Amino acid sequence: MQTAANLMPIPGHIDPVPVPRSFVPRSDGRIDLLGLSLTDLRMALETSQLEEKQAKLRAKQLWHWIYNRGATEFSAMTDISKTMHPWLEQRFVISRPNVVEAQVSTDGTRKWLLRSDDAQDYEMVFIPDADRGTLCVSSQVGCTLNCTFCHTGTMRLVRNLTPAEIVGQVMLARDSLGEWPSQPEGRMLTNIVMMGMGEPLYNFENVRDALKLVMDGAGLALSRRRITLSTSGVVPMMARAGAEIGVNLAVSLHAVTKEVRDEIVPLNRKYGIEELLQACADYPGTNNARRITFEYVMLKDKNDSDDDARELVRLLRKYELPAKVNLIPFNPWPGAQYECSTPERIKSFSSIVFGAGISAPVRTPRGRDIDAACGQLKTASEKKSRAQIDREAAAEADAAFV
Ligand code: SF4
Image 1: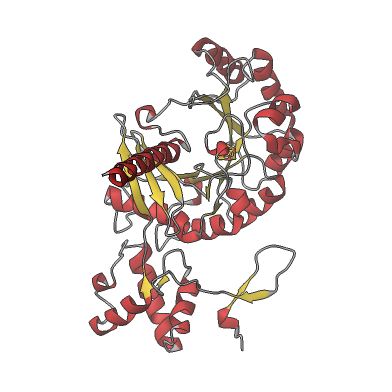
Image 2: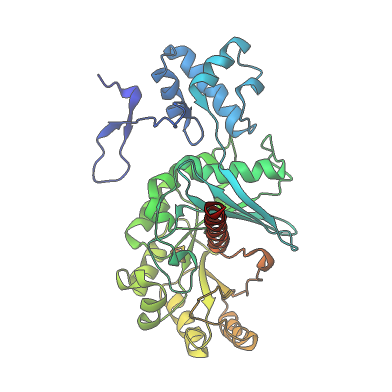
């Protein structure tokens, strides 16, 4: 029989009926505690036959060790009795994503290629600046949206990342920066952008659950004001993102006419520019101190004219959006059909927008020596493994002739 304790509400307005939360065991039969909320953690303990009161207490302790101290071993948990450690170890694990490759750029940018237990690769990037450090987090393996300028868009979607895999990126970055236990001051990892592989609003529940863990003041404790969720314009989910996550919003706009945006961000054919900007205007909590960021990749002779800049200003004014425009010089990848706009063109575009009183900085390319643009490391690794497969095949063929 289901009790209120082991039910979870289905998020959303349509079907609020509670359904049981199931814990999917790993191939070794153990349950991963990473990515679980405090309630789910308690339920996982109860499901393993820990008595209710004990489960409540242990869940609190475990949660603190996982998200505040960064512990991955039960033996490190000094306030949990030693006799209980083997019981926990037999049933549970606190995972981290597997690192396939880690690279550090000459400018300090760090990039990781990560692999899930079912052998799916995804990426995260850490970009340090003088006064802050931003982690760019992935939400999906691949992406369905096929933006034509984006390298990830050329990969087919394999699956959504789980809350554990999403929050796991933050945990891994903290491990690597040595930022445990969680300190309110002096961190290198100060900001998070959901701007890696995938469209976060197509993986809404998992992204929301992971970000709730990231924002919890007793754990990772990153303020919602330091987290930005970037969408290509999944209009029907934007209001829910505002209500249920409430982080800063960034929109991959990239074009101001239907014709061009239909081409470079095909989702535009479903949710047009005006509809998208209206959803931005309705997004809660925006003001001049908390502006919406509009990402705009600079593509030569495609979206970079002075007229485009003026149209951008007109649209932002029409919807009275507290906006900041991020101009991104296009970082070409092998097979890309676009070139980056010239520096003069970017400057001219930027000054028109700035001239209208809207901030329009040009993003400095980071980590170019390590393929830090989204999707590039994964592709490089796939190439490498194909080459390796070829070598192995050749070696096998050689062996057959001996
Ligand atoms: S820009 Fe974002 S939404 Fe578009 S294909 Fe790339 S990862 Fe997907």
